[in-house]
Image (cartoon, rainbow, N blue to C red; front, side, top):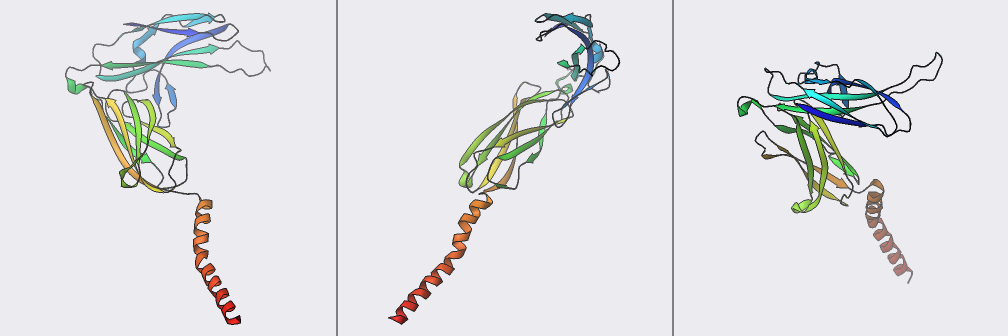
Amino acid sequence: MIRTVSVENQSDATVRMRVYVMDFRITKENDFVFLEPGEESYSCSKWLSHEETDFELAPGENRAVAVTINVPREVEPGGHYAALLFETVQPQLDQGSSVTISSRIASLFYLTIPGVTEADVLAKAEIVSLGFPGWAVGGPVKIAVVVCNTGNVHLDIATKAYLYGLWGRKLEELDLGQTVILPGSERIVEGSWGKTPFFDRVKANVVIGYFNEHEELVNESKTTTLWVTPSGGVIAAIVVPIALLPFLIWLLIRRYRLRAEHN
């Protein structure tokens, strides 16, 4: 099996490129970490080979790199992953020259190896936790959802949050986007709710959606509640006059009585 990856020099100077393969993983905080080939349990980096390893690109030039994928006969079913990296090679500098910075971009390979039976491939995820504040003073309200891939293939997961106020009235539907989660790993999906009510007890229902090993849509959900209240300044503007109301009434009555006594 052969796949082609293209790289283009969008700068105004000729650059030298180095091409190589590495493993990768994605951290819970959504950062990419690249490792030596074969270090990850779901690695397929040693299955990839390419002839182009070092070349120059003129300004505006595009180069297609052919990648051959050789899958071993005996391999564990499920997802296997690798990254093809293109890194700029800086010219050697004379001693005492300024430090230069190399850049690199990655083309990710996601491979799914079928098993002998359907049970060999499992596509499953769950919501581990919801990061909503129990008490929010105004908005925006920060949202964090931790999702875990408990299967053995990567999943493209879409996440939404449905927000309801008292008596079940719908306040808002938030699209928290889509993210890819590798097997056995967790990702944090983040979002923000800006149009908060003035005062309400809010029920937040978070739903993730993905396709299982049978290409059927699966939805998993988790619910939490939070209170939304006005800011401290607004509360003070409401509470202080109410607290002073008995004193003002007493003062008016006293003044009325004094006037009545003088008359």
